[in-house]
Image (tube, rainbow, N blue to C red):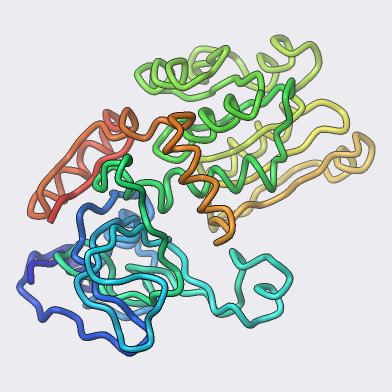
Length: 340
């Protein structure tokens, strides 16, 4: 089968013919319909972030497809079923899973990180984790639900806890951030979107932002947010992973407000601890999505309350995966998908 394989030592991605993966009794073999192109993959390729499986490894963690073959013990899906593969897979038996916090499972594995992913014609995954996709949702489009939509859904619903009437400022309007905008607006929030890219701010308005702020055109974003909101946002979400913007998001919330950090960075940030106490602020992190949240999210997409088709700005064959990363770095895409 064709696959995009990451090799170590700066060798980057190579397009190779590799064997179709075999499956265990509790696994399924999925013929990949599409796989979303995520900035996380760029970290592995260009920024030195290691994968848990040592290279060579097939990347790609945002996938949908059709069940080609099911293991002998599989009962929840069968051959020919249309499925969504969550980006993060859980063990189901650790303390966190048993507390209903499977997204921070102590034994979690990630497609295209711990094991070979979906930048390939076929991928083998545990059957217990997949969801069937209704015929009304285009299968290729459905791929981005696995991460670009599910990650901000968990952040907005469970961690930021956006309620109708909340003022919500979103820092970063990329592939995940734009859905934090869309989902916060769908939850009834008054959304202010922040970015330095005018095209992304245009998209943010399309997806429900009431106001936008170009961070490159104001003295300080937090001051602008306080001016717009009359003292600070109820909730700030940072969906970039930059210490400077995390601090600005922190400074943007009102007394008693909440900061939700969705973007990843390994760098240190510095905030005035006294403000957390004196202003009684909450700071929460958000990682991935719990398995139980996928079904209602798919229903929202099916009902048309969440728009996924407009999120996909570029489509490439697998062999042009590097072009997908190019448009991502140029800032002219929201989400690209590759189609093996």
